[in-house]
Image (tube, helix red, strand yellow):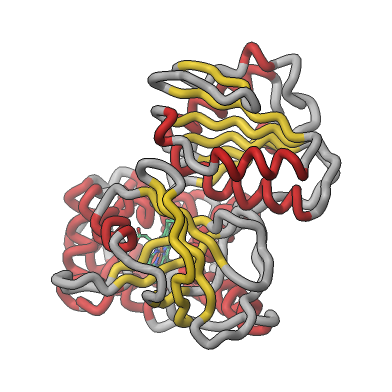
Length: 392
Ligand code: HEM
């Protein structure tokens, strides 16, 4: 346990982390990559460029310092990070590296405030948190390894089928190249794909939600074409191979006897497809609402698949919103423009349903506000952010 003096000193230095601007966070990453260039194979370089990831670590440490004497407040947030780390195969020996550059950055950037006593307190507090992370991440690795069809680290998969789902989204069906089983997963989880892209000096890892129900035979991810890595994946062919980490993630469909409302925008539809297929696989007679927004009809993915799932799920109601060019199919109820829930307030299970959100952060923030305004309890609103986590 940390002593009271350490806790007090760590709390005193919260503003250093909470207000760490771009200059400080960039200094940290540049320092770390200069001394430990091997970590460039682990971090998402486009998140680095956008600066989004740079703040995630400092914000998380500021939150840790704030609740250092009430760690239970952070348990969900820590679980989320542990899943993300485990999917990226973060190892125990990485923690002292991050710790060293973190302390050095604070020392170099705040020579007055970050004195020797505070540095010692942070060294202890960081080591305490790192131990917790290492233990929990080892638990996730071991669980994956012990599952039937499970593994640790990466495993080679063959792309057995590629399906163009819409203008921008392709699905990749993946089977282990060793011909063995694949471990089960929970709807909503993702897997990490390692990409060695020609002409790129560093390996890139990306996480993609699984877009089909767990079935023991294959995995399916559905990738939107929008950057270097997705461009690389879209250029692959059936028969090509990829290195993949086991499914992970804590945004999962709860196995409860309550109505489910799956709300997505754009490629945020992918975990919702896994949830929907899972409900169909379980022959659930529970009400399911599938609400989806996308830009145009040609960007609507899984349209015919949705119609087929609807046959297996009599209690499914779908609504689709097109930002532009709304023309609909007869099986779906179509809206135009922004997704507005108020007209559905009498239809949606606002009092007892679970609401799952996935899409761009502004979309989810908007929908969360709309749900709260309809009277949905915050605890029943669950969401997945693609990319570094941002609070809604
Ligand atoms: C992601 C915190 C240690 C590598 C994250 C995120 C947070 C975080 C908050 C964002 C999670 C999300 O998006 O949901 C921490 C804390 C650490 C720590 C508090 C120390 C106790 C490490 C270490 C490594 C690492 C030791 C490996 C060198 C990463 C990577 C990501 C990540 C690669 C994904 C970000 C990206 O590439 O976009 N971490 N982390 N972290 N962390 Fe850590």
